Length: 99
Image (cartoon, rainbow, N blue to C red; front, side):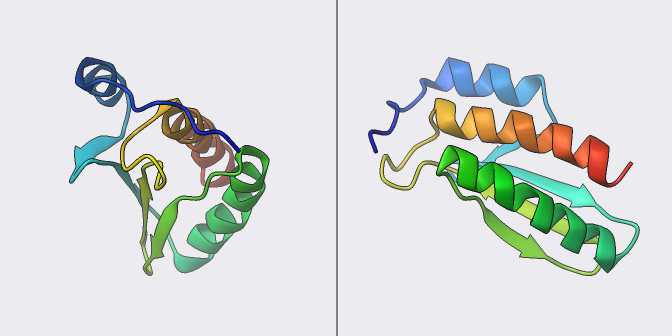
C-alpha cells in the first residue's frame, strides 16, 4: 500500500494547535486520562477497528489510569495525513468510549 508524503511543519503545527495532540520526538502524542483500567481496555479495543480500517497502527501504552498513543507513519519516518486521519477519528472514539 502506498503511504502519503510527510506533512510539512506548518501543517503539523496547525493540527497540534487545534487538538489534544502534541508533537514529541517527531511523533503525534496524546495521553488520555482514564477513570480506571477497564476504560483504557475498552478504548484500546475500540481503536483496533480504526487501525485495521486505515491499515495504520498506533503505538499504545496502557497504564492504570492513562492511555498513551503515539502516531507516525513508520515507513515514511514522519507524520503524514494518515496520522492526522487516525488522530481525528481516535478523538471521536475517546468522546464515545470514555465519556
